[in-house]
Image 1 (cartoon, rainbow, N blue to C red):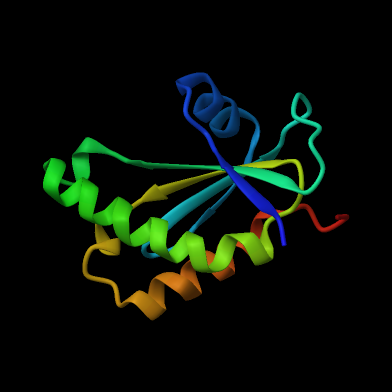
Image 2 (cartoon, rainbow, N blue to C red):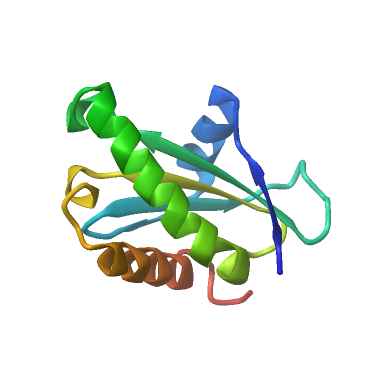
Length: 117
């Protein structure tokens, strides 16, 4: 199982957005890129963001909490070592059933990686 670290700096999020693959689902958007500067084996990094357009702080925090729990259950088994992931919450994540969010993130994780890995 892969150890998951947290993306914290704005530049890290921007690098994933600029260089990464993107998969869009009903409840979330997943971006992923290989991090050439981070060579620790058996480790991936993960960050979460929700745009202010989705609602006020209460709504955004609720979406992030739901997505963090989904990611906690799914990401360690499906993540690739040396990759950075950013999960962007969409407004639909608030009403979407929890099982639907799990399906969304599984679908995104399977489709975000280049096929030669």
